[in-house]
Amino acid sequence: MSRAGRYSPRLLRVWRRNLVVYRRIWKVNFLVPLLEPLFYLLAFGIGFSRLVGDVMYAGQELTYVAFIAPALLATAIMFNAFYETTFASFVRMYYQKTFDAMLSTPLSLEEVITAEILWGATKSVLAAGLMLLVIALFGLVRLPEGLWVLPLAFLGGMAFGAVGMYFTGITPTIDMFNLPIFLFVTPLFLFSGTFFPVAGLPVWAQIVAWASPLYHLVELSRWAVMGRMESSALVSLGYLLLFSGVFFGLAVRAMRRRLIK
Amino acid sequence: MTDHTRSMTPIIEARNLHKRFGTFTAVDDLSFRVEKGEFFGVLGPNGAGKTTAIRMIYGFSPLTSGSMRVFGLNIEQGWREIRSRLGVCQQENTLDPDLTVEQNLLLFAGYFSLPKVIAGQRSRELLEYFALEHKKQAKVEHLSGGMARRLMLARALINDPELVILDEPTTGLDPQSRHQVWDKLKELRSRGLTMLLTTHYMEEAAWLCDRLIIVDHGKILVEGTPRALIREHAGDSVVEVETPSEALREFTRSRNLQHDDLGNRLIIYNTLGPDLEHQLRGAFCDQTCTFRQGSLEDVFLRLTGRGLRE
Ligand SMILES: Nc1ncnc2c1ncn2[C@@H]1O[C@H](COP(=O)(O)OP(=O)(O)O)[C@@H](O)[C@H]1O
Ligand SMILES: [Mg+2]
Image (tube, protein in one colour):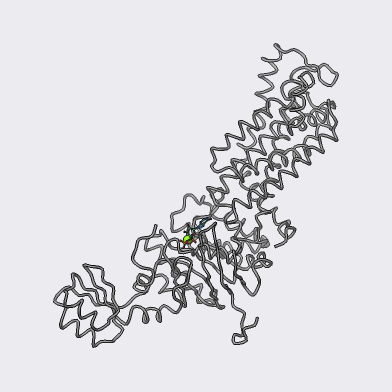
């Protein structure tokens, strides 16, 4: 079985299956991305920003809320895709045997895994779209350029969906996901220029931030939402593409090892 | 095909299949063929390698060595076409719990790229055929064991397959549900569908299968029709004697009768006809003899032993 022969548009059927399930409880699914930015903006806008005041970013004074709003988009993109291809995919793979059933049809393992990652990215786009709406209502988004967040959400979703799927391929039990959450996602969440600018940090911390895929997503999101970033858009795009590609390959390999016996 | 004696390509042709997991050999040189329209059985105790063998037929598990052709196509290159032409009813429940009964069929049809209209039509027919129409909006977790199994069968038929693979389709069902499944399988068989069934219910195999193999430790022990296997390995009739006397044991030995001595029970497999039965009745059976027909279960236990598995 040649490698190329394992990919076909049939994989969209698996993607669609997830969409059908999502639509069944779309109201609940919409609620989180709508409320989450509200909570954050209220908490940081009312509470925290009095402590911090304005923030210096890319040579400009910004209110703290304006500074973190694009970062909230980026972290939501990360969480949605990562959650989907870790916990949700793991449940489908391990408990529901959904993949086993699919692999008795003309679907290949590669198609199932690709569709799952694509679905993770789709959830990132949906969440980012809803959040963008809320943030725009606060007057924090320049339009129409802010809509670039949607394709960025897809790219970011592919990156974090792929890395999540890689963890699903190598994680023995579902509660072991606490490990990548604690050691990978949480540090990214905190140290990717999300809540404070990277520019003011010591050099080593800047280097660490630079290696973080979330940092690049946050940067691109700031560029889309407010037309400012402190690094280069092309470098960030390139980094995310590379990151997605590498972890996509690793994810497929890990899942093949795990499922094909 | 090099075999000129058969005009038709077999539906399944497995040659010298091996499957190793590390150093453990789960399938050990299995060869068999299934002809078009046949109901073929794979019998074996738990852990015999039935599921492993089946997974090699639909290209889920790669072969360690050997060759597998289905519909005349090699599984390694032709897996996608092969899978599009067969249906699998897996041993575990693999229904999609996030979906309704009807959605399970419709979305599964999508995996086969069936056009929407045809998918709708097939799923209506199958829901009716398996008496699930009233449940079509139900979530699968609310189905009884029998209904879930019927939905698994319906789903395995959604693509109008030429071959259906059934891995222990009635394990865990109550007798009513089991008989219902058997009736449906019989009916499908009479329509000319080729089927491969694994089971450890002998009654099921005897009732459904045209031909079967008994497998243990990944190897084929015997192959044949249920009737021929019973005749050969269990005789025309079986005599079970409770607390057999030493005299009977001596008689059994001296006449070289086929038997199993279980200590407090002696089972004699009568291949010699009614004379022996009369003799036993007259000389050894005061009250503790049971005379019955040989069954596939006798064959199975004789060949795979009476030791517990797992
Ligand atoms: N993925 C696997 N890794 C290691 N051993 C396995 C694997 N799958 C099955 N086995 C072993 O192979 C043997 C045959 O299993 P299986 O084909 O499921 O038996 P059956 O279906 O006849 O009950 C069993 O001893 C089982 O433990
Ligand atoms: Mg089995």
